[in-house]
Length: 413
Ligand code: HEM
Image (cartoon, rainbow, N blue to C red; front, side):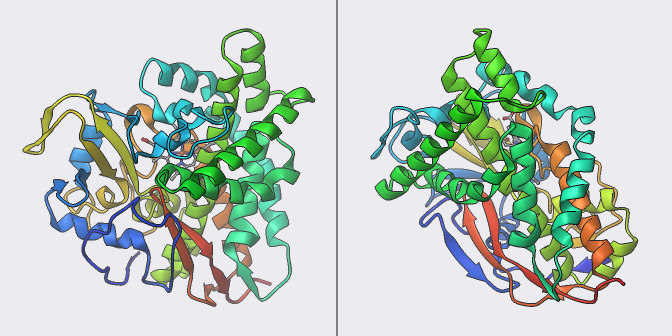
């Protein structure tokens, strides 16, 4: 059961450059498609204009995601994303200054391991499975709304991922609608710290989030929630209050838009390839893996070389910036048969949709569960499905987010 996607435009586009809110619309204007043009180049390639390495081959990407000479921490210099969050260009607010720098995704060992280990039990297979009835109830509630059409993002993906992340944190579900504007402002801060307006909005968003976290910390918190766990670790003197804010804001950021975007992209990929009917017969677990391979929400991750070393016949020098293109590596013809075909029955040994190595997505199991239940809910409700309007996208910091995705079709009786 394979389907062909539209031909992609070629030629690398500059990720993480210029306006953080590039918008586009139509069914063929997905900026991540541009990254596929990179496959025609070497799997590890220096870009003269951007002055950084692009890694697009699956083998090189997996090797580099585990490489000891590549750091996840960003340097303090002019226009790097974390410069702003560390209180650089136009930075304000002592409270949020340096907060993003503490996010464990942007740390190496031992700080990375220490912070990850603390919250990792919340994401064990058992704990994730315990959220299943809640997620099923939520999807049923969201899909119960009447109507001949559905806007997938506002109607399903955003409230679902927002309310699930609130539950993980132990935050009131009423806060979920506030997450999207915050996530956008923080994402912009990560990519465009050289724009003072973006910096002050990003800091304001972090400030709001930490104020809200403080309020939640003062009250009753559900046992087993992230904030309950972090508060206890703080009371036990294991971590500072700054660490509580950092890990809590990071979990909100890491778990929210990634997941809503993926659910939107999954629907878009299926409709793009006219494979809704085939999906109805597929094993949804396998289909979700293939959809993650085909078009994941996090297209790239960045690393900084701490030593000079060789990979794929290229010499990466200490201080070089390396962009590992997860989405492009997931379309590597050396590893995947007919890589540009969406095949809901494909059995995938490994893809890079959730990264690889020490920073492998901690929320992968949760994201898979949310996506599977959302797609099953849609499949049960809609016998046929098609775009009512061209999807609208927005691109920032490695995430090509969907702004608007309206679908319609025949509903099951
Ligand atoms: C890390 C993707 C959902 C929490 C990552 C990374 C990727 C990723 C690619 C690796 C970053 C790197 O190597 O620098 C995704 C995708 C998701 C998703 C595509 C949805 C489909 C979630 C959810 C959570 C979550 C629901 C839970 C709250 C995390 C955390 C990390 C991470 C905590 C950092 C891991 C570390 O640095 O050790 N994610 N993610 N993610 N993700 Fe996810």
